Image (cartoon, rainbow, N blue to C red; front, side, top):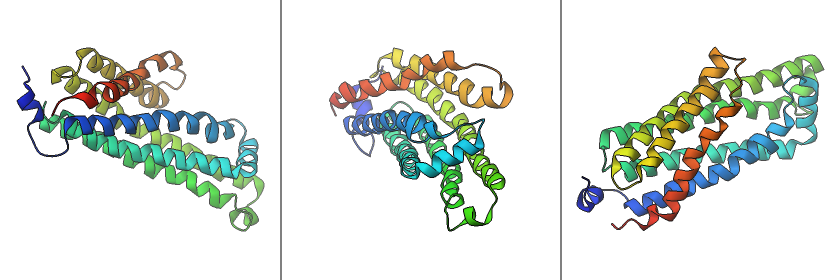
Length: 235
């Protein structure tokens, strides 16, 4: 069994501080992510209508920019959460905890790299830049190309994120100081992300993965536990 002595053994931040930082980081992502995905960025993209997409972005450039920086904040929080969760689960298994952290770190970095494709759109629609030299059809093509490049890069990054959640769930399940049910929920969440954002888009494009949305709540439930119970762990 894991004792309190072994739980607190090791250098770095305390377990309750690690839980607080990880919980706050995930909370920010839970708030900012849907805002960007479904409103600030997502509402402006008409996947089957490039002309409408360019028009929407041009007319709502500020909202589009807010969406981009919301994504940037979210992916930056992934880096913070990866660091905090490493210390939180380090007493369980240092090597696996480090691998788990690195996987989320890679996910965050790859997502930020993919996001640079969206930043490119701001240059394309600049009246004094590409917009002045490109024809409307070519402009539409390049804007949609940037949007699809971001989407593809983001989907590839989810391979690392889903693997991270699977290992995170394993560590939580084995920890002894976090209820095992949260480990199971995190593993299910990882499987849901893997199917929805990696396997389905590349291998089964006609598969409707909406039903898997329910699996994504595992990390949210774990976040609530981190903020309510994890911050009270005695160190």
